[in-house]
Length: 171
Image (cartoon, rainbow, N blue to C red):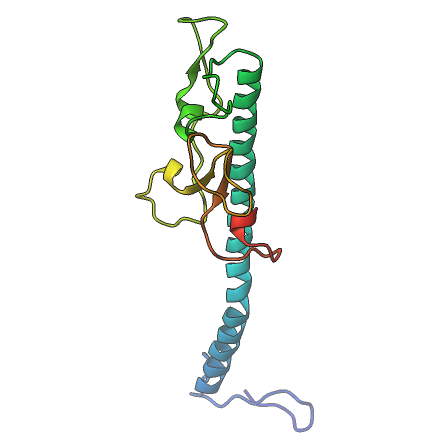
């Protein structure tokens, strides 16, 4: 192609090609993508942690609501208890396995959970869901929770601190 001088139209010589990228363009592109990926990684990790924390809140609320419902059923006389018992469930499994309804013996069971949720902060899938939680009995102190004859509360056994600055054990 020939062009008139001074009109800014490019001249293309026969046999020359303008296809593809130069090596420097490729290096710059890879560097930009690398910088963007480096900036995105902490954001992705933060999103994963936020998701696990939301699952933890939900699981704690579900179990604690079931424990309270069990205690209320005991107080209403729907579940029999020993005179010296606190009225809280003997285990987390009792919430999912169900207990016999004292007002309708032999006919119905009362279920408080469909299944025991897992602590999302425990990464080992081989551990049963009920063993992922720390248990606090009614007789133990809040600042030093200990398992006992009943389940008054549950907590995460993870030692890390949440995004809100509170350790997971104290949620």
